[in-house]
Image 1 (cartoon, helix red, strand yellow):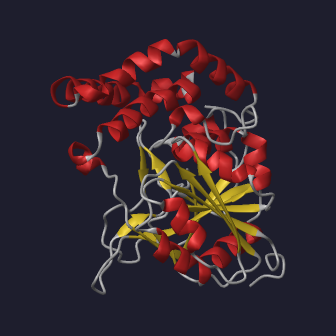
Image 2: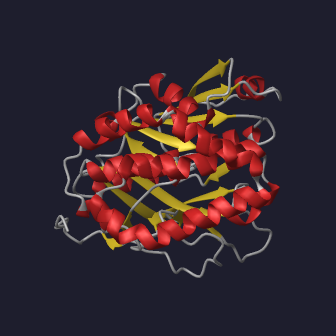
Length: 343
């Protein structure tokens, strides 16, 4: 391990909601991390399954731990903001309760973020899905954008054949298991908030990554850092998901664009994004009417949304092309210079 990374304090931040069954194995994986100093902050969003009590009961030798029990469900966004406020560690690992990082996970991410030149906001690892056999399927290897304004996990569901085995620059890092530099989080925070509480849950990590790009920060994928992740929310399972999850997912799709759409990427994405919007509307009208409330929420909160967009856009330091190049780009070599034009 590089000398520069030795001794850097990392805080593992976990937001729980009905997560009691997942916490013991998650904590066991944290306890096996070979990096120190390490601390843990757990924020429970008013679970009814004793998640907070399970978190308090688990002993982590040599790792400090705080458990914060909220009286209401603030979602991943609000819960993670609360976790960030409870530590002053220079590096923060956001971790889902259903994730199981290998012992070298924190060390490898920290080493990559310290060794990568330039302004690196975050490093994300190679997330794989649980498997009982030698063959394993990828879950997330960084995030990519499509011209339909979808943000997808690279390699999701693919058999791992080593196809994503090189470190790369990527558009985004999943909140399920990524290491963030506090200096970058502080730089892109809006009114002191890292994640936008209006997102509640889902897509809040992608919105944060837009702000990183707009402020000149890069995100890196490190394949040597591996985490097992038991992903439950997948597009193909939408009809089986709770109505609240689908409501937030639809609402946040438009909220993301309201903050970050520009004239340049409007032209680049207009046709596929409009087609996708029509598909979503028809699906909701025919099969998921519980999500219609997302459209009314966006209308009622339009002034608040526009005000936040103004705050975000007036703070951008990079030309629009810095973000636009990521539409339909899966990744960039680390050696590529940041010479984006404003086209």
